[in-house]
Amino acid sequence: MEQVMQTFIRKDGELRIPVLRLEIDYELATLHDAMLDEDLVMIKATKQRLEKLRRELIQLEV
Image 1: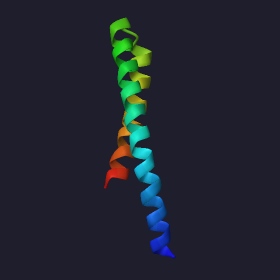
Image 2: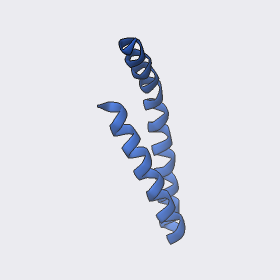
Image 3: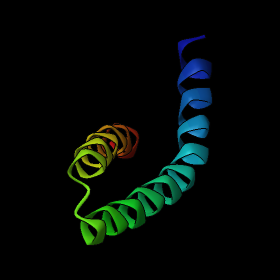
C-alpha cells in the first residue's frame, strides 16, 4: 500500500512541476513590473510568493 501511495505522490508531483515553473515565470514578470514601477509593497508580496513556490519546487524535485 505504501508503494502505491508513493507512486501516486510521485506522479502528482511530476504533473505539478511544469505548473510551478509557469507560476514562477509569471511571478518573475510581476516582480519585474513592480520593480519598474518602484512599487515596494508589490515587490515584497511577489518575493514572498516566489519564495513559497521555490520551496514547493525544491520539495518536489528531491
